[in-house]
Length: 472
Image 1 (tube, rainbow, N blue to C red):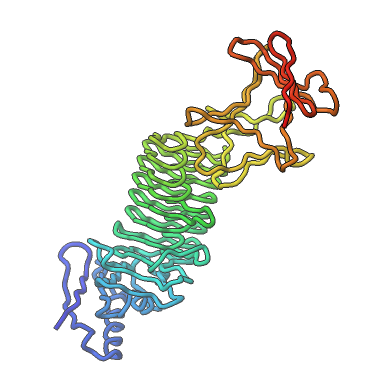
Image 2 (image 1 turned 30 degrees about the horizontal axis):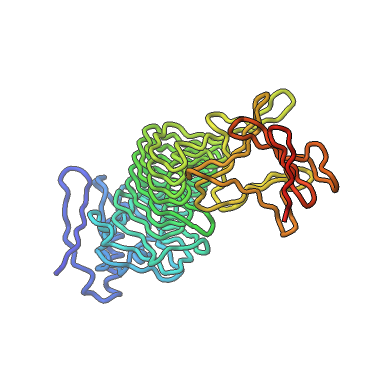
């Protein structure tokens, strides 16, 4: 006969009681045995004061983890007692719309344990497309320990299915062990609205918006955790670790890779403590701050990210301590701020060059009260560019081409077949007025003037001789 072990006492010599397995019994008899043992051990009649540990098994005693939790839902767990639910290897698929709900009045006395050596062997699979969070603790409840599980979806969720793999919400708390994996959920591990999650060593992959997310006054400890390939390309979202709206994340020693916008991020007055982290091969920047967010990353390593090693997107956030290596657009974006000098507004670069960047493939526009005056249009894979440079006294102003090619043409293109390029003063019918010319300086430093008139072009050479060239 198979047995289940109930250990009484948490210190000194523990007594062991061998109970018959519930499996061979009828469902009704099994239920009576489980309830009877629960009442016997957890009723609070702890005469020796040592406390109790009661172990249930899935699938022997309950077919699924959520059925075990549902059984405990209405039960009072006595002071000092611990209920542990041991879950055997396998794939446990949540019914559509169902959640493994961890909320319990004595939830901090409950432990739900899968395979703590290899969590991938004990999978909690949500139905696709997901409509509910897979695991949740809500409304001020606490949960003692969740460990040894891979919480998964058969394919990646989109914004339409923006639920979480693990969620603590409305002032709740979840304690995760070191063997937790979450895959394919739009939010991997999510503490929201004044909640806390301990998630050291957790691993989150293929999230949509955020892998590990502290939101609206929440706290996550995710030291030595990993977040990879978090991206929603359609909406241009995707962060590995993110604290948002007055939240905090401590992810010291963590690792982020392959995320769309940033590996470690702080937004909206939040703080991300990312000491001794590595953020590499992200499609965006290694470290990212926006809207007065602060990332402290002393000892942080940014490597081979497709944007910057660290990026303050709007100039109001702050990032400290990052060592950037071979990031495509440089170590940092050298943000600018709006400043005031006397009675005039000015744009001031705090460090290095002033940059105007957009992550999207869209134009940058310059407008005045009279309308659009100039546009910088996107060119994918641009290797060459134009630059403007002022001139000293007696020197010309430059409009030039620069870039990777050895020789680069500079094209001025009118619009439409009747459009033309005007250089010099405006053209008028009849003989060209003084100043209607293109001036060319030859190799001998002598100036030649090219005049343009109806039907012919006049070239005035260095000797002052006018030569007429007929136009076709």
